[in-house]
Length: 296
Image (cartoon, rainbow, N blue to C red; front, side, top):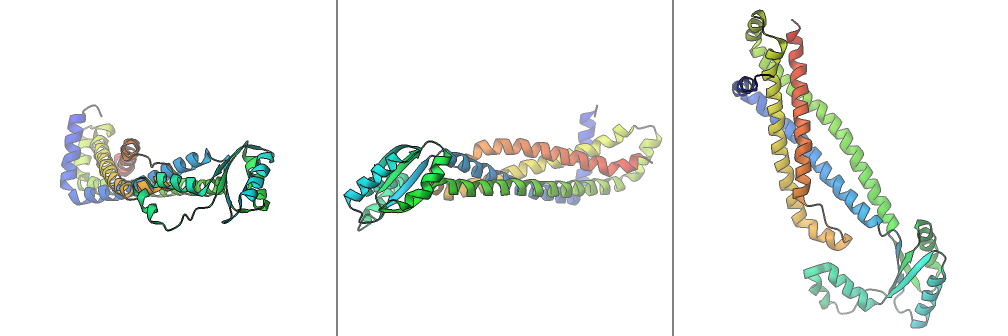
């Protein structure tokens, strides 16, 4: 592509003569990238949630039954402190638990003031040495007198990890399928353009034009299709992701104590990925479509 100015001019010229076909190609590749973009942002956020919650694998919440008297609570505290693998035990009474919940609710915390009674139970926050100790305590804590429920983050971590792996594998499968479809679409679009210029290409070859000279405008056309698709898909992904985070972002922060990944940061990475993908698809599709004509 030693003459990019000429090649780009020819590429835009043939796109102008075949607007419908090129528009269809751009829309198809944009749809493919949009799907990949949504998979990508979902995967990144689920991975972040998993990594954040995994840091709390050594924390176990042990809830006492409603109405448990002070003596039983003290006995449970002593039992937990003596349990092998336990680093520390913190008692959280129901009033403190309500204040913590209000803090998590942020500006909506005032809604809890209207409750007739405090529905939260007394609890213990137990820190353990390692995952083995956490598993053992989670299994045995229910046998302690007065304990009503045990919440262990490992269950949540395992579920999020499964979701993360599913999205990752699903993204790879979907991406492979859609990339192949996109290459075929671009190849067919360029092929129709080549058919329209078949006589012109034959004359150029007869006059001594090299394969590189003939191929370049079509390759540039495919690249332009890929770049335009990448830009549109990135913009749409940004709009959708921003809207979703505006709606549920604060709720996720309150419930999981973790924020979603900022849209601006994600879109920079997505744009780079989409540009590389779009250029690759456009180049491959163009080369495949014109190769057989250059062999004549």
